Length: 256
Image (cartoon, rainbow, N blue to C red):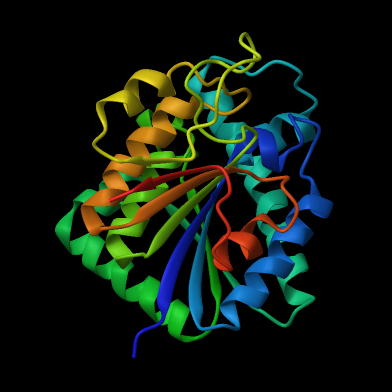
């Protein structure tokens, strides 16, 4: 019987501690949880942002450049650190990782889609953890693509994933911007086609990433095409992945 599958998407601001550099302590905590969940016959794919922000840090750039080619250069430099961090931390648990860099065309061209699907399924059968990122070095539009949120949803569609978990620096989707309104309420559960969802998503802020909450909500809608439910949760929440696996309600669940 085929294992359940989760896609875990990790945002730039969270992963790089708001631009200070890759937060290995935080990644280590996620890795421990992922390894445990994988041992319970759940296949897990990581979609990880952070290459541009990590590249900026390594290159000593304080401000994010607007020039596409400089962004691509930063992505190339930063991707090295990103991959090294995941490989090193998973290796401590004797788990192999596999780097996959994709563009939107890879998931919309039928032949390439089928090839990537076969590759991912083989990697999962081998017990590896695929780590996917947008191929920012060669893609121009993808840098504006939505901080990998849409990519994560398309990967969930490709694999027929049970869950898409988006770890972010926000605690979920609120009915108003919690930065400006201390009375804003967390929306704990909402159907993907509820009209209120898109309306409130633009009111929940983001930071370093290029997506923001709106792109996460649109990703959840895309994921619903494969009957994939989406959880949007604060990545620093203690044992966030384990607790979701155990059935605890954390963040916002966007269900089908």
